[in-house]
Amino acid sequence: MKKLVAVLLIMMMVFSLTACASEPEADALPTIGVTIYKYDDNFMSFVRRAIETAAVDKATLDMSDSQNSQATQNDQVDTMISKGAKALAINLVDPQAAETIISKAQAADLPVVFFNKEPEASVLASYDRAWYVGTASAEAGIIQGELVSEQWKANPDWDRNGDGVMSYVLMKGEPGHPDAEARTKFVIETIVANGIEVEELELQTGMWDTTKGKELMDAWISKHGDAIEMVIANNDGMALGAVQSLNAAGYFAADKFMPVVGVDAIPDVLEEIKAGRMIGTVLNDAKNQGSASFDLAYNVAMGKDPLEGTSWTFDDNKSVRVPYVGVTIDNIEFAEEAYK
Ligand code: GAL
Image (tube, rainbow, N blue to C red; front, side, top):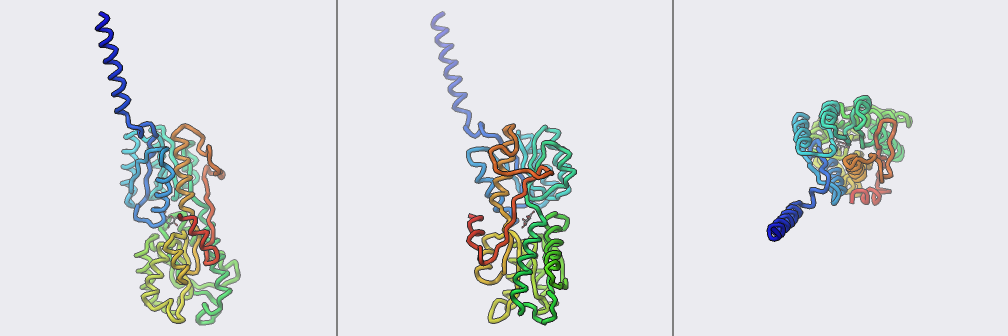
């Protein structure tokens, strides 16, 4: 009998030891389901990196590229939920799809943090376990407008035909995206509010994309040539395309110049500012938006208050708004630091 008890005890010990050994440490970390609307977006690649950095030793990320398809993203969210995600961090493809994602999260009793593409306030308010991390979209337009106004006034020769009117072309981001709509509206309103007369030569969407920005600028140069006096882009990706096109058309050499301005302050654009091929940009703080998105999602995955241990605050709409900052050659080091 004694022998039998001893054998049983040994068997139990071996069993519990193997059970421990087979449990990888990662299992102890909560899984957070993350979608990025498309990996092939310059600015979002920096936000993605910031999320990955923030997650180290804290959570396992189940991250997907939604490849600019809302249908794909909806399927990815279903899969994340069925695989046991404890929270969702969602960069929507279509800002109008927040309702769909919320209904999936709600059905699974999961919290969801949206980031970068802002859902409508009423939709966010419809679920008490939904939050948003992003920016105040209008702010980028206002800062960009101030930057353009100041430099336009300081450089009277930019008014090539001397008619006292700023003839601009504007590259818009994705139509219907709150950032694209607000930046477009507020940049022009701010320039006008500064007493500058403007003429819109072109306004078209370049979908945040460098190749599309280049194509637009190629077409506009051949149509308007030197009548264009200012190139305003809703983001740096498109501004880079404009610079490539202008470069090929002989600008930025000898005394041929064209002022170009963007938003984001991605490293490639900081190089263009240093080389004198862009007059400025607006820092869209990828690092802080990425880490705040993760911190909130992590907190709610752990059943804590979303803002616990962070220095962020919510506005009236359960949203964290990371501030924008204007960037010119004068404070370029500051922007370089922000992207390190
Ligand atoms: C904006 C950013 C764009 C693009 C877009 C995607 O905030 O300025 O470059 O990344 O988000 O939603």
